[in-house]
Structures are given as C-alpha cells and as structure tokens.
Image 1 (cartoon, rainbow, N blue to C red):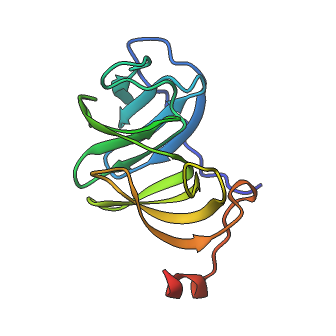
Image 2: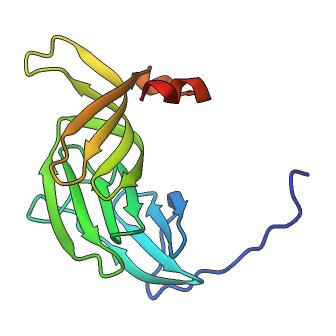
Length: 168
C-alpha cells in the first residue's frame, strides 16, 4: 500500500453535493469544483460554508467553470470560463469583477495579489496566424497575459525542471 494514514471526513452540506471534478487544499479552505462544472464548494473543516453557483450569461455569471484558483491573502477566488476571468470574494462568493480573455488555462496558481501563473493556450492575434502555448503570468486586475515565461505543449502537460526556473 502507498499509505495507511488516510482519514475519511464526511462533509456536511445543506444541499446534495454533485460529484467532484477537482479539489484544491489551502490553509483555511478546501475548494472543490462540482463535476458538472457549474458549482464551487468552499469547505472549512468538515462543512460547506458557501457554494458558488452563478451559471448564466449576465453580470457576474459564467457559462461553466473551466479552471479556478484562490488567493489566500486577499480571499479572492478566480474562476475562468471560456470567455472571462471572474473574481469572487471568499467565503461570501460575492462577485467582485471580471475581465474578457482570449486564452484557456490548465492549472492556475496565485503568485501574489497581482499575478497568476498558468499554463496557457491563446492566439497571437485576431488573424489566427500563430498559437502560443506555455507558462504565462496573468494580471489579476485586467486578466491580460503580462509575461510569457516558458513555451510548452499545452495538451501534453507542462514538465519543468529546477534549471527552467532560472529563465522565468
């Protein structure tokens, strides 16, 4: 066996929870995305303290959740759908703002309150001439790519070694 020290903790929730597509563990919260890509559950200890469920096309709404990350210092949840990077306060899940984007991400992580690091795929220009895939820094205020750090194959994953970080 890999490990024998696994604790199973039942999660208390006031509504039935769907299956889970992914979970990220932070100091204060566990944040889990429903497998329907419509909900995010914010869990503290053994209870769901809030649920983000803002599917739609209006102000503060997303078409589906494709990626997310959380800033533990500012208590902001960043959610990316196909067209926007949206911001919500945690744990209230109040909408804080959004930015239109022209890229997709796999695996976002907050670097600091101003920047997110993500493996991105996006088009160079409106003419669709060339596509850039790779590790990029995203502005949390505008949603824009502010630095292209490392070119990679987006769909085959991103493998970096310690020496690669010298070039960032």
